[in-house]
Amino acid sequence: MTREMGAALRRIQLGSALSTFGLGFTVPYLYVYVAQVRDLGAGTAGVVLAVFAMAALAVLPFTGRVIDRRGPLPVLVVASVVASLGAVALGFSSQVTAAVLSAAVLGAGTAVMQPALATMLVRCSDATTRTRAFAMQFFLQNLGLGIGGLVGGLIVDTSRASSFTMLFLIEAVMFLVLGAIAATVRMPRPTAVPKDAAADGSAPRGGLRVLLSHRAMVQLCVLGFVVFFACYGQFESGLAAYGTEAAGIQPSTLGIALAANTAVIVVAQFVVLRLVERRKRSRVIASVGLIWAFAWIVAGYAGLGHGSQTMATAAMISTYALFGLGESMLSPTVAPLVADLAPESMVGQYNSAFALCKQLALAVGPAVGGPMGASLHGPYIVTFVLFSLGITVLALRLGRQLTPVQDQPSLAAVPSRVVAVSLPENAPAGGPAPVAAVH
Image 1 (tube, helix red, strand yellow):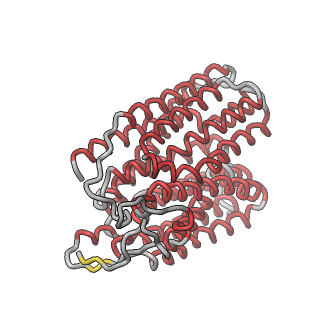
Image 2 (cartoon, rainbow, N blue to C red):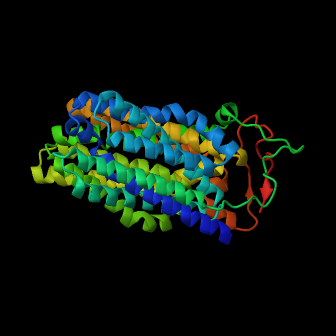
Image 3 (cartoon, rainbow, N blue to C red):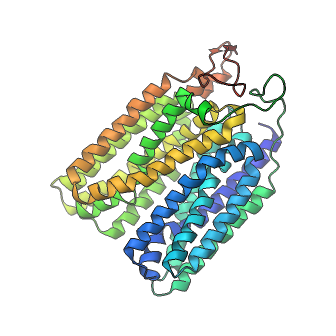
């Protein structure tokens, strides 16, 4: 990695951390703000949260192509401004229509940031540094969210709407800071003609057809949906409902459990990174499925066992902590794999497609898990144990579609290694030539 790439990468990581610090101010309190502080009711709060997620589904299908054509930098700057405007508007929204529209603007802006930032990380790293770059981003984002939530908790006062308005204004400023930092980044210039450029120098073709013909990427998207559905889509819905209804824990304990989740991620991230860097990505992801299956079994003990209330509380906190361990294993494997599978002309589209699968899971997860976690306690646990085991099966199947270096990037440094190239089927001029490369 060149000095120019390193300088750009540090600025991107700083901006990303500050933006999630701003998100931490509002995300934990959005429901309370709409339903209680603005007195718009639980129904409106649910609509606002749904619109926040659905806005991402509306913009992400178009985001990738714009990133690939215009570059991730201008897209990120525009998205940060849009998100800032949405945050300010939501902070002053006292009517249903205003709150819903503001949430849509905020959700669209934050959704576009994800693939733009991911593409910038790809452009500012290489095969040997990409894993650590994404692990560092995940670490800083979780740290930012945790600190933002803690600081926001010291400011909020449900009797004063102005205290929540201040939170949204801080969030808006952090988005603008991200945009300002991004605007100062000097993206590394390509040192050679892209590998996926056509022989006559014309622009490479891309699009949904190319992506859907790439079996490894399609399998990774399916795997990503199950990962986010079985974990992230349950944190603040099904698992929270199950914990309070079946396990009988206090709502305040959920905050401790989420803090335990963040703490495990922050403490374990780089220890885990050393362990997984020289192992096959598919097997690391498969092991996450086993860890999460065990986490759901522990949650089952909390709500369906016959232990004391103290044991049930400890089990629920342990469940969130185990999820954090799995998350720290996914961050250096899944996102870099998306980048490694993408043809150079379609990095933005691949990142956007994966982000879309993530948002679909985050939208469907609460809708399915919430009612089950609240009333169907046994079936809820069994269902998500099976989904977790499904992660293991899907990861091992994905491993068969990957080249040795895609599955284990550390092999790139090993001499005299023959590496086959995995490509979308019927790949156009936008993909590397399907021949074996000898290193």
